[in-house]
Amino acid sequence: MKRKLLACVLACTMVASLAGCGGSASQTATESKPAETTAAEQSQAAESTAPAEETTTEAAEAGALEVKSGITLNVTTTFAGEESNVQNYQDAVKRWEDKYGCSVADSSGSADETFKSRVISDFEAGAEPDVLFYFNGNDSNPFVEAGKVVTIDEIRSVYPDYASNMKDDMIPACPADNKKYAVPFYGFWEGMFVNKSVCEQAGAEIPGANTTWEEFMGICQKIKDAGFTPIAASLAKEPHYWFEFAVYNHDTPATHASVPASLDDAAGKAWAGGLADIKDVFEKGYFSENTNTAEASEVFQSFIDGKSAFYIDGSWKMGGIAEATEDIDNFTVTFVPGANERKATDIISGLSSGWYITKKAWDDPDKRAAAVSFISDMTTDENVSLFAQTAATALKNGVTLDTASLNSLQIDSLDMVKAATGVTGAAQDLCTQEQRAPIFDHMPEIVTGSVAIEDAISQVIENMNE
Image (cartoon, rainbow, N blue to C red; front, side, top):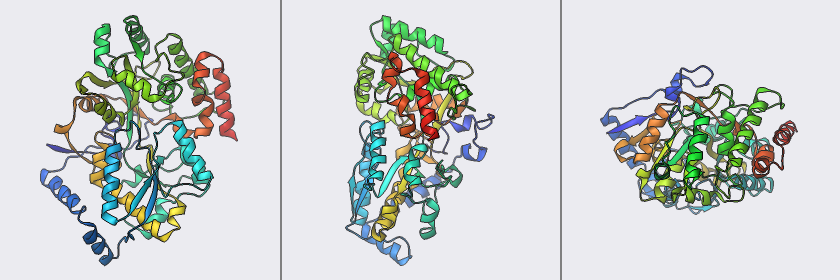
């Protein structure tokens, strides 16, 4: 049976009534549609994939978007590496190329700090792409402030139906000017993936909804004593997951999405407490042995290979796990254990990335139409449903999901988020890559003590004040 799952089915539906969460009931309700309606939508979606000649001709007769064949569109996304939708993205690109007789010059990369630096550098050098799938928090501030991307309102002034299938109140605004630039694709939740066999061999309990941080430390010690690595993590390349939850353990859903103005304010104290906890976990030897030098792919493989028990990542990682193992039933996902006022069931979720059209493409009449058509094709209801699966979206009609097709890990994820009690966005999204670099680029030095926690936070504050 196919069900319609609206944008925040994985997080917001169960927390719409919480004070301080910032979500409205209209954004978080769950809706079902009759089978006949779903079938009709599928029929319409199938019609949208008609041969290129027919589609283009009909569009021209209707005075709609016309795309000149032979255009090469430069596109940069995060659909690379272990990202679970790489194949879906490549297939969607091929469909667009075949439909319009155009081509894509792709320069996608894994969404780590190196990739973020490269994107910003490209904009600064005038080498930005035509279309960009990128973060819509403070990471986008540099190229927004430079006037190098186009607002959705400006695009709609020429193409009124652009992103018309999205809920406008769920399209995030850029912090730099409170204007909307990026068409949301699908969102995320973050959780702790578990290799069941490691826990079983170590005689350790899998953390659950009521597991405290102190209890989690005991579980990690038991796993370490059994000869396994408790936590697969690269503090050198992907420190942000542990930063986020460690800080969250000194916050609440209502206060987490904030940045410190001083070391002594609430956010400053939460950041210091979180970093101290990460340092403590490192000193206990619970992270990967090479956590301060390892590539992200190395620690992920150790988790898949049964050398490590726990791995924090986002909903997008479920596909990567499924592709990396022949025994998906050996993996589950659970809450990151909580401390202080944060319950383990208070999660991180949101719509943090979207599709941008750059000013460079917009000012080129041929590329303008191609860019609009590319994003419009990428963000149809059918395509968003294909990519999102169990993730959040901003679709007005919600995601069409065949629950019978889900694997055990995906079903476990639905059970997890249904039990969530609070939701917040990521605090790191309130800083640019450059602003948070004193922490994110120097986590190895922080956990080894060569950089003081207070000094790293002070440098972040100084960067934000510049």
